[in-house]
Image (tube, rainbow over all chains, first blue to last red; front, side, top):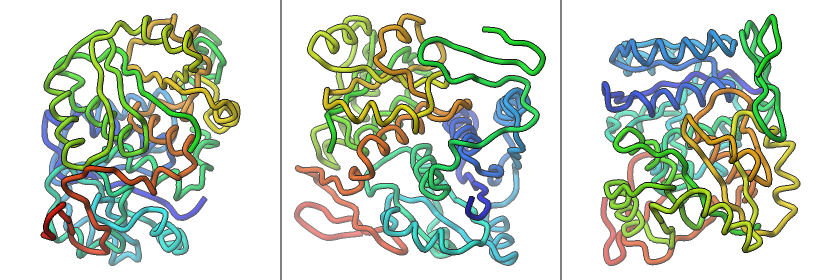
Length: 182
Length: 182
């Protein structure tokens, strides 16, 4: 795998963004990010939903909340990390990904909702577009992580899982840590 | 490009799923699907939101609503099409995608919310998993389309657009059909 990745979610609104931000967290976790930082706000419902999935399906995905976005971004850069801002206005991902992957520095991937402060475009190391069409930040993040990790995230193992899904041509097979069941 | 793709969205609930299904539509459109069929229900708010994006950003993405899911699936197969059901329980996408791409038949990609009828697993030509971890159907669809279209969807042109975004390292550049502006 390339360098480590954490997501910074901007502009989350309670309760309006609960489901979309939950989808972002699940996507980040399933595709190999270390964690997600929810900027500027604490959403306990979101936290419980994500922690419940982590407990059942394992892994070390971390969720942090309520930290001011500007401080998170500046601290990340001071510590030698780089910022990838996913935005429809940025350079196409196929064009940007080479330089992003060439640097081993840990990446903070910034994904906003509708109103991202203009300052983010300046602070970002890269502004990258997952197509220059209106798209979901959830799919933008998914495609970014897949290109960044080069598909290796499909082979991830999540430790300490209570349950594990067994791939199946038809039907649903789930294995628990101490017994096998439907 | 490989064969044509249409999405079938199951189990949409009003108003709970408005934003997630909108994200699905935007993802489907941006990544080259022909359209989305919302099964069993009509959601005018969703329709207007998606049509507004299509009008401004162009292309031929179609949204249909209120058709019974079983009829859509059966008609699709009768006409020689194939069904790809995206589900966490299916065969891993990297394993399934070869066979899916090898057939030129038009694909109906079925994406559900939480409660997908068991019958769908039987009717599907393939049950494919975008990781066997809990993930968003939005990112599952994005990764499926990217693998299916082999990244060529990043070069799509959308005709009859009123506005077009110009890729930019910093800032926001938008061109309208008759003038250039911010």
